[in-house]
Length: 615
Image 1 (cartoon, rainbow, N blue to C red):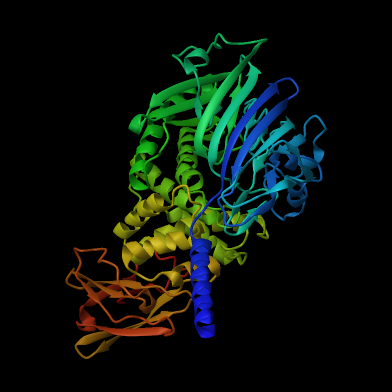
Image 2 (cartoon, rainbow, N blue to C red):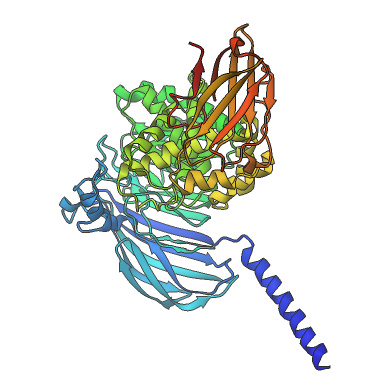
């Protein structure tokens, strides 16, 4: 009986451990529902707000504390953003030392006046841009609790993203304006201070009421309730305020389902246009009533509809029925169901910034990787798809629309300042290596992945990635595994070398010589990062041949990218071997020229030895 009991206990423990392991590795994410109302004073740029937040703990852990972001606190002398900007070697030109010079009526702040959990007062501490909260009652797995907050804010002078009275005269660019619950996921809390970079948030439903001067037109995240009563271009072309004003103010009521942010902008001189895009999506445009910019903003509107259709086709279907392009902010920045862009630009620049920021909707908003840790997955993938969109929609014929991203990456390598893409966005030594690693090297990751697995497989990978990971905060492993499932290749080596190291790709043709009636060719891998190799040969009679050397670690081969040219698949090239020799079944006299990767989609940092030509 004793042995039987021991066996029963062991079996029970094994079953428990197995169940726990399964639960511990299953996907989950937290959920928040916000109800907020603010009263905005457009004379002193202060606002009073209330917030009711229902927080559902879908994690397997019990939480005894939570964190809120108080982003506006970054715009105060001595803040972490201020100190970092004054100490980094190449500060953002929009920030520099401007925060340190703000007067008390120019700073930004969010002050929490009271905070309760299920009616119980909470203890909390403000630490810069983060509110640290000790809970009255721990939140058990699966439980929902309600936080209620009374807060006051002041909109800072426009410096970075958020603010009042930007350089183009837009009154209010209201981004990251409310106390925002920090994300908690399988890695724990992400209560990063706001220093300079992007944002990470929890999905949920937002119900927001904004009381503001009746002459201000408001646009942003979500669906406006009762648009026919609000005026300001929401019902017809009249920009006059609606009839529901009280004491000179209108209450704007927006609802936004399943978003991780809420942004709005307001100005008394906005023009508000609206057109219908693909799938009956309302496309709203808010811009200053200036004759010098009207023509460009009108021209932008149908092309924005074209962008929506392009991204729907090449990434995935936009799931909402509203999107707003709004003049505001300090350049271009994406938000939930909207973007803020500066609008006094030449048309090419206006369209380009719209193409880029709108593409973020798919990668930052709907996929929403953690940009503090994996900024290249958002900025890079956005740069990739928006470059393709711009090239196609403007009638461009660039065979490599990503050539600018490749040039940026090569510049970074030669600068000697490159850091691995695993570097936290706030931890780069300078802004330059951060920007190029995020935008250019991130874009090259996808473009070059097409070289590795084939362009058709890359297109399928992007669509499957979107379908599988929308609303799930994917990590780098998720895009890698998606590409593996589509292509049948093993790609751990690709993600590791490209994103986790600063290893570079450098191949060359080092020897071409006669070998009887054949030609012997030797290639050399000089860089640490291995790659499969496409080599194309021009023969003296005008014909072409291609030779494909798969990387052994891939455990598979890509389809022939040029079916009109006969391809010979050679033996795998093990990454340990610095050289690779093969023979062309033709005498040297019949070989005219050969080149490694004529598409230049492989990011070879020194292509001077990628071509051999007969003298």
